[in-house]
Image (cartoon, rainbow, N blue to C red; front, side):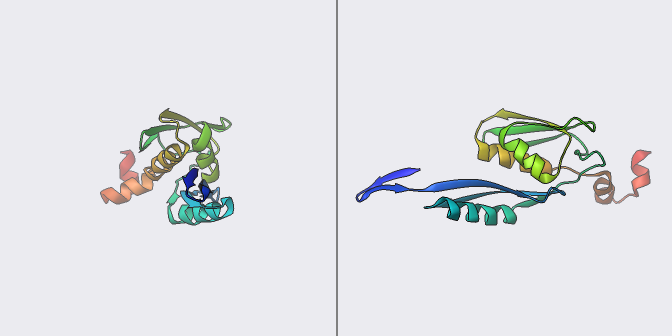
Length: 147
């Protein structure tokens, strides 16, 4: 971004950073600074603050379909069979790959803003629940869920 001030033009940079360990943890961060390196450092620190745990199944996919919203962006995700790969575009693809997901179908709806799409993807991943989590929330044994 460039801002015209009395002394001339003042440059500012904004970096959208996705941090992940490819084992079920991912975070989206934003950093703003007068130089690119500073913006990226701030973005990495912000991304680490907003880490999300992602439950992965044996096929390195998600346990059930999920939706996420952030601003005007909506993201829809569906689990996929082994060998499908990551079928997603733009910022959503980066978030999914860094979360360690290898088989998934995802669609961006609404906005094409990369920050909002990345945040929507992180929100969708955060909303995922496993059968164990559901049984624990309801206070019943896992075997009773199937009955």
